[in-house]
Image 1 (tube, rainbow, N blue to C red):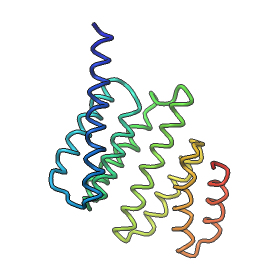
Image 2 (image 1 turned 90 degrees about the vertical axis):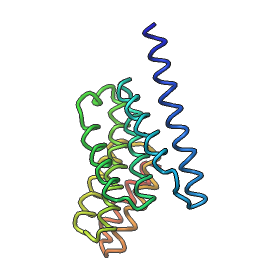
Image 3 (image 1 turned 45 degrees about the vertical axis):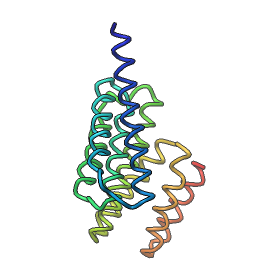
Length: 178
């Protein structure tokens, strides 16, 4: 019975996540955001279920939610979700096994990127730089190749601000990940 219950929760979480991402794709392509609340409700439900199951998928679900809030210009809501991801995934329970710890670092790095872009939108350049630096450290520590293009974006941001040395170091890190 317990195995069936866990399988049911897992299936429900995946269904909510799939529904939300499908709706996001539709909304993004049509740029009509009616019904956006359904997306966030599905993502919240999926994140809650994944958290109950003790899987790191809750972090990825929260990141999707934060990115969705950013897409519709709800920067305060996005900010609070990004902060939650950075806080929750720093919990020691995600420190083992190493593969989970590295994935947690990757997700936290992505959350710091979101926080950095929110700071850019709010014209808080110093905060943006600090958040991007935190993102770089986490993405490099994670060692996931998917971090390379993210690092390239951050390098471009530093380069635009005449910080060529930082951009050069970040690009070198991106090349090592690719």
